[in-house]
Image (cartoon, rainbow, N blue to C red; front, side, top):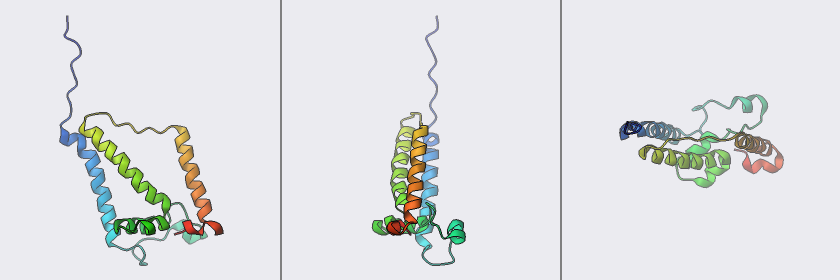
Length: 142
């Protein structure tokens, strides 16, 4: 008679948290660079191709200015440059914290969004893009 299934060995803590900590390191590095190199000064970053060719703001336009303002603690300017990106920073922080906690506790990490969520996110981005390019939505333009 066998004693039952053999428990699977857990990876060491350092190995479990390497991916979330590495991801945060990359994000912090990127934000530090954008915080140090002002996107409001021309010549530091490429111009959005859609904006350059058509004059239409894409959902990402103003994202670097938003990140720069966010790094400097100016939340109003960050929201004014790109509200969707600024909300995304908060969502990223929450998801990252959950990822780290689950990694520390050796729990599986599964972030699965159903098709309806993806359609909803796409719809929000589309609406944001359309509204920010209309006269009454100028407050959302970078």
